[in-house]
Image (cartoon, rainbow, N blue to C red; front, side, top):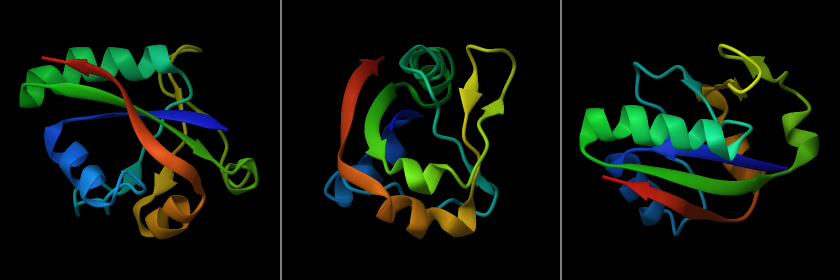
Length: 110
C-alpha cells in the first residue's frame, strides 16, 4: 500500500542516513508516527507546516505491506481528506521492516 510522510530537513537527513529505507525512531515527545493516506494531505502538511517550522518541507512516498497495516485502523484527523495511520513509537522497527523498496522524495517546498 502506498503511503506518504511529510518531513522536515532533519528527519529527511535521518531517512537519507538509512539509505532511504527507514524512518528514524521517534523522539520522546513523539509517541506516535503518522504516515498519511493521500499525497494531497502530505503536501499540505509539508508546505504549510514544515516550511514554517523548519524552513523547508518534503513529501516522501513509500510502500508498506498491507498485511502489516491491517493491524491499525485508518484515523480521521479532521475530515475525509485528512486520513492517517497512528503507529506507536515503540513499533517503528516493525513498521520499517514492513516497508517495501525505498522511500522516495516526491515534493520539496521552501
